[in-house]
Structure formats: C-alpha cells, structure tokens
Image (cartoon, rainbow, N blue to C red; front, top):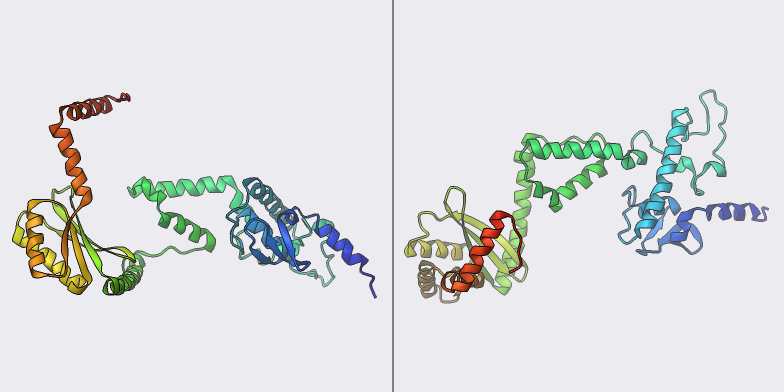
Length: 346
C-alpha cells in the first residue's frame, strides 16, 4: 500500500499554482474552491478559478470584485498556457489521446508539462469546436473587430450614443459567448419573427402593470412635444407603484388647440386604462388643457387633474428671463459668450 508520499508531492506541486493565493480550499479538496474576493464556490479546481479571476467568461462567470492587478496577473497566466498548447498542437501533438496512429502508447504529459499543476490535456479538450483563449486576448483581432463595428455605425448612420446603451453591450457579449460561426438574424426574422416575440413579451409586461393599476391605482401623465415636421405629438404614460410604462403616442396637431377635442382624447385614454384605476391625470398648465381637465373631472368623479410641476417651473424660469431685467441681461450675455466660444464666470 502506498504510504501517500507521492500524493503529497503532487499536492505540493499543485499548490505552486499562483491561483491558490486567491482562493480557499473547501474541505481540503482541491477540486472545490472558494474565491477570496466574491466568495463564489467553484468546482473544477484552479482551471475554472483562473478563468473566473481573469474574467474571460469561459465556462464560468467573471468575478466582479477581483482587484485589477490580480486580474491582469491571472490573465497573463491563462494566456501563456493557451499559447503553449497552441504551439504543441502545431507540431502534431495530440493531447486528447494517449495512443498514436501506429498503435503505440504516447507519453502522458509530465507534471513539468502542466502549467500551475493544471494538465494541458484537461484544458485543450474540444479544441476544434471552441474558441481558443489566445484569440480573445489578441489586440490586433480586437482592433479589427472594433473597426468593423464602427464601420457598421458609420455606413448605417447610427447615432454614436447607441454604443452607450445596455442593449448594445449585451448584444456584443452574447455574440462573443456564441463564438465563431454565428449566423446573424435575417431581414425577415428581424422584421417578423423577433418583432412578434418582442411585442408579445411587451404585452405580457403591460398586463403585469395593468394588474398593479387595478390593485393600487395609477396616474396618467401627458408629455407634449413638437417634431421636425412641426407636428404636435402627445405621449401618454401611466405611473403606478410598479413603475412607469409608455402607453401610446397621438398626433394632436389638429386637436391641441380645441378644448372639446382635448377632453375627448383624454377621456378615451381614461377609458382605455380603466376609470376605476385612474386616480389623477397630470398635464401642462395651458388654458385649454385646464378647461378640458375640468370637463373630465365633471364626468369622471373619481379622478383629479394635477398641473405638471416641471411645466410650472419652466414657466417661472421663463418669466424670470422676460420680466426681470437683470436676468434678461445675464441670459443674453451668456448666450453671446457661448456663441463666441468664450467661457466666463458670471
């Protein structure tokens, strides 16, 4: 019976892996470790731990609180390991089998051939179907990819601030997670299939909000603006304890000046949301909206018209600029300096 000396030697060499300085062994088993930073328990030893700390998103989630210096250190280790494996594969080394084509047994990788106690054969499995880690870290490939993404923005006249959206970031992450060979959605899929799925999902979310309106009540809010064609557009939103949801937009160019038509429009929206659900309607302070609100409260006894606080403040600031000479002069001077490109302290 083995005295166990060989096992201890093996464990001693495994402990040389720098990743062990950033984790805690669970029950003394090297296959189950806990990250020292986010306390996430990982199975698979230091292989998955290193990818967790390096934030490669390969077979394991990234650690969100790992120090930057630790991340860079482990990232270098993982990248070096992959480069060594690629060099071996270029010379015809088959890491997935111990038997050569002639039927002779191949020599298993020794402990010295393992990086950080991690067998190269355990990492290089399925190398034909998975993206190599080396390609993820190659700066030249990232530059080429980013240039192609930027070209997509330029040629399709996509506003640059789209790059700041969560959907854009999530899209790039999902493409990277899929890896090479992903087939992009077709024109028909975007226009029909996925659009229908999104509409159905949006309707489901709206139904959840409607249930909240019924249980707790809600507020209808109107927001008017003028588009480039000088059309008056009214957005209707509904607020409740669950949050604010967009309901609809209406082209009010022909009705925004008429009290009766505004009343009819607001009454239809209340009917759509449900009279028993609506507690108040928030509109701007224009005379026609106030008159339409009075008519609505006469018909719908359970709701109230509330003037928009933002519009009240806007009107107050507008009066400051028009009716107080000092403010009017200051604003005029500020606009003059902005147009000339000079920045001054007032």
